[in-house]
Structures are given as C-alpha cells and as structure tokens.
Length: 452
Ligand SMILES: Nc1ncnc2c1ncn2[C@@H]1O[C@H](COP(=O)(O)OP(=O)(O)OP(=O)(O)O)[C@@H](O)[C@H]1O
Ligand SMILES: [Mg+2]
Image (cartoon, rainbow, N blue to C red):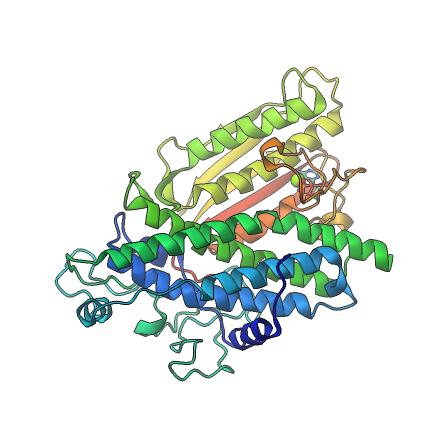
C-alpha cells in the first residue's frame, strides 16, 4: 500500500502555503478549439504547479479536521489519495528542450491575430460572500521557489484585480511556431495520462468522505454535523469541482487535437442547448422514478423553454443539477400523492433568458417542505429517506444505478456546481402545496472560481 513519506508531507506543507489561482469559464475557453502543442505545453506547466497547490491545501485541511474527524479511516484514505496524486504530478519528468524551443515557448504570440487577445480578466464571483473563499488571481510567483513569492499573500475573490504575469497564467498562447519537437507532444501525452489516472483515483471521493462522516457520527455519537464541518465539506467539495474541472478540461483539450467536436473547447460547450440538456435530464429522472417506485409511468414534467436557447457552459454540470432537482421533485410528488395514484400533478420546468442570468425554475406540487427544515436541506447528510442506501465506496461503478434519493447530497452539491461558475441555487417552498427551485446560471462567464 502506498504511504506518504515525511519528506513528501514536508513538500506538501510548503505548497500549501501558496494561494491557489482562480480561473474563469471564459479563460478556459480561450484555448480555442485546436490548441497547438506549445500552447498545451504551457497549460500543462501551469497545471503542474497549480494542481499540487490545490491538492496540498486539501491534504493539510484533512490532516487538521477537528474533533477526531481527521482520524476516521475513510478520511485518512482520501487524504492519502490527495497526497499520492500530489506526488505523481510533481514527479512527471520534464522534457529537455533546445534553447530555440524554449525561446518560442516563452515568447508571447505576436503574429497570430485571431487569438492574440490577452487573458480576459476575472471578475468577482457574485455567488460568494466576501472572505468565504480565498483565491489569488494576481499571484505571480511559483511554488517551486524559482521566483520570489510571498506565501502570506492572500488575494480575495478574484475580484477583478487580475494582474497575471506570465509564470502564473493559465492560458498563454505559444507563438505560431511550426516545428514543435516530438518531446513536447510526448510530454503533453505523459501529463495527460497522469491526469487521467488521478481523476480515476478520485472518482470515489464524495462517497468516501461521506463514509468518513458516518464513521465520525457513529464514533462520536453525533446526530447532526456542526457548522464547522458543514463549512469544511462545502470548501472541500467546491475545491474538488474546481480540480476536476481543470483536469477534465486539460484531458479533453489534449485529446481534442486529434478528434474535434464542433462548439466544444475541452468539456465546455460554447453553445450548450438548454432544451436538449433539460429534456434528457427529465427523461433520466423519470426513468429512475419509475424504476424506484415500480410505476408504469412517472409523474409528467412540462418543459417551457425556447428550443434554440443556448449559452456557454459545461453540459455535464447543467445536467447534474437538473437531474438532482428533478429527482427530488418527482419523489415529493409520488410520496405526497401516493404511488398508486393514476394521475399526478405536473412538475414544470421554466427557463427564462435574461441578460445576466439564465434562470431555470423547477416547480412541483409535492407538498413542500416545512419552513423549519429549509436550512437543513442544505446540510450534507440531511435526508428524509429512512434507510440510506449502502455507501460502499468500493462498489462496482459499472453496476452503479443512480438512486432516487437517500444520501442528502443532492441539493448541497448542486448548489456548489451552480456557484462554481457564479450562479446559485435557491429553494422556496409552500408547505402543504409544493416547492420551487430556482437555478440561476451566470451568462457572463467571467467570474472567478471560488477557491480556498
Ligand atoms: N422538491 C422537494 N419537495 C419536497 N422536499 C424536498 C424537495 N427537494 C428536497 N426535499 C427534501 O430535502 C431533502 C434533501 O434533499 P437532497 O436532494 O439534498 O437529498 P436526498 O434527495 O434526500 O438524497 P440524494 O443525496 O440522493 O439527493 C430530501 O430528503 C427531502 O426531504
Ligand atoms: Mg435528492
């Protein structure tokens, strides 16, 4: 079994003293549909520093969780995953390059008119309270100590003061040099394979941390988790969304140089069609509902949306949020009206297009939620399902059937996805009638990642 050495833990501690650097959706798409090997190489360089910093923060935080939570076997297991991934990234062998190639990598693109705009600035993420997360869009110094960086420097929320210098830029187009040596491409492929392995290792993080919380609740005989643990989970899962976004984006960009889908830059779709994504989420949620309650036909869902409405987003995130909220609504409708009912009230999904936001309202007549329980729905592990489905993190993923409900993670995680790109998720309920969920998605796409 892999174990972290003392030396590795010391290196992790060092990296954790540097702030993470936020990236916005708009910056992520600046790579364009076919980045050159040189541009990809520069992005790998950024990630080979940025990812270890983000991973190191998580290791440190897991190490110092209060009240004995850090001692739970599942939490330790997750911490080891983070430390091991950290080690793998910092050890990817760098290519040896000629001075000429190095010069081309450093030189900013000059002649390439189409993409020559500078990195767009990040703006304050409207979904985040001041001081809730820290990120530093203007940090200019590298963690490997080559340049001088003040570890005590603390940026705020990527609030527009972006002064990115070359060494810490996410997207820097390399110049339009034609002869990138094979070492560059070999390195890009090597880096991509390392990222793929890491991504796979971390697939089970959410369920394993949840398992760790259960272990803690049992050991410490806690019924609810307190606000410091709730805040930790919010930061932890938000950070995970960011890390997986950067990793997923980089893997897709590297593969994109071979096979290319129109309108896609990595995993971002510049023309995400809401009608299409919503239709699919509705079908999936209804299918899971029929399966779970043994219904001939799940309650109906009406979609009110312009068929050609599209915007820049990550379709995977959007379908996740819609699927989770729809499952909640369908469950509430079936359980309030009884599974033996022939006809159920229709759940409505209404999509509004504003200048700033696209807002999706999911309205059900599932009886609503008592006002006193509203704050609880945002806490992890809060569920009204009696028997939580088994939380075995070693389950075979190919057999994994999305459960109807039961972990108490659906709403809080969906809200993190919404906030990650500057949106939000709100819930308003009329007890005795039904619930409206408002999913706000920010169209401006310039807001920075919420980091800690
Ligand atoms: N539309 C709704 N109508 C009524 N109650 C709801 C609705 N949405 C959520 N709830 C309540 O909030 C609780 C938490 O929802 P959440 O989606 O976070 O977890 P869950 O559905 O119990 O489990 P899962 O993690 O599988 O989604 C639910 O158990 C349910 O009691
Ligand atoms: Mg749910």
